[in-house]
Image 1 (cartoon, rainbow, N blue to C red):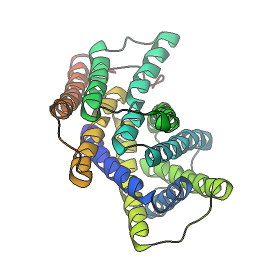
Image 2 (tube, rainbow, N blue to C red):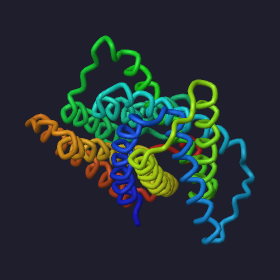
Image 3 (cartoon, helix red, strand yellow):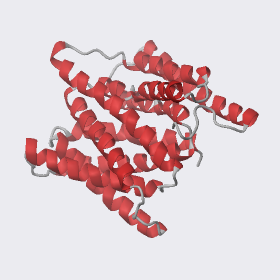
Length: 300
């Protein structure tokens, strides 16, 4: 599978996870959801790496630690924010990570004197976010301002985590190993958060099924995303990442009876066009120069 196709599949699974987390929040706290998500991911990736013969021993434990810190923190903040916000608004704020990532990459290029970022590629990222705004048209009232700020912060930390995933891929860390340690960090952080700030709840059939579905979809999406960021380019993946919002919009219409508006349809088309344009720009530049299409691997 190519990196763009992996990102499309990952965004669909992440949107599915968002629905499951939103529903599971009726039975469980944020820490519990993060813990069970991490536990399921740890078991699945542990079994997968063993089956593939991939060792879990790493020579860069520090990189995995910081990737887990940023990624798990972003995950906790995102789960917390969508428990108090409409799903559409929470998804929009978290998916601003692509815009933050573009700014990080541009700032890194300026600071170290790296190669110029393709302005057309950056434009596709920004166009994608305009499409997101048209799809979801999010509004935050006064009672939801705190959750909105938390969701915005989750997007910033997600961007940092994505760049760290790219760095791990560049040095040859298998995606299974990356996802395994991230899942381990999520399980430990979720358990600690639950002990410190809440309590464990009894399971119900509905709640347990939502946790299982969230964990399975999240693990599959995490593996695909990690692989895509390891072999692809950050800004191209960032553009395709917006498809998750389109999938979430479809879920909202089908599951929550949200009305269809012409602005939403126009936004979905803009998201898809931006993603396709980013992939084509990347391929065209690679064919012409045979070199990197955004920044040097050292910056990414």
